[in-house]
Image (cartoon, rainbow, N blue to C red; front, side):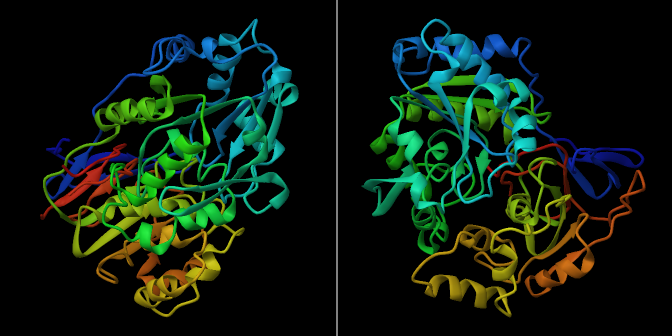
Length: 442
């Protein structure tokens, strides 16, 4: 973390694929950046090393036998996972044991929409798309689901049938702090990633999401992650494979092996790479949602707002720069539910009263204008969304702050904080500028 001195300080916000440059006043702004960690010099060797020297359990080649059907779960387009490199590492490591016909790739969409063929080609490359079976998971399609029983704290578990029927199940993903599940990656690539709708809704119900432990960087004792781990352990994962990325979305390190031990080790690396302690609260916090693909819609941008909310003063202002090329998004029920109540508290009350939770509950429970201190924080966004669309959000104290997006710079108000790639928590009264940081309050 550094406070800049002398003159105007340019800060690049991670926004879409191009970024957004603002200038801040060093006399009243604190800029927070992550400790720089260089990307791996040889990504392929780093990935293969994780498969050959796992954190716990046998190497991958000792897990798989010839002729076995292999299911691999991977993140959808809303996550910056290096999917192609990771899948190619699996194929190379199992050469001579398994061929491409033995593999099925499952896009762990959770309740998100499936990815298009064009998107899959961006994610995996043409050659892999044309030679390996790939399925988008569909949480709402009963024919794609298999009942697995009840796990954790009474969670009814339906999982993708291709996953359940495989002889070998491998999760792949990347680990970063998550705003209510503690950390991403690892067991989340089973549930909610490959789970049925009722399973996901239970994991994201008001009681779990509303817990004080359902927050950044907490897994043990977090009712969401406790159940996520219970599902993965109870239903079986044969090998888990995750990476840690730096602010440039480059692979810093890779981890493989038994899913819970692997994920615990990766989380410790993420604390060093993606989180920074902040020792004060700020009047104004400028943040982003780490740019594309993470800022595709307002639904995802809540993560950046949630991180900023941990260090903004009561009554303060959060400004979130998120491109939102996909709108609210237009698919799903997020916009409809957002417009269904007159006040933040009324929305939370309606969620708590529902017998069946909604897929969007988690976003509203963690919305800075709703959670714990309703209405205490004002939120402004800058995005490509039309101003009239964001009127839906006005009752939640969210407005559109017009930045001159066709201009190379923007001047925030004095006493503001800037979080270009921040999505992790922080903690009294200058402004903070979070530049390419995923931060954490100590």
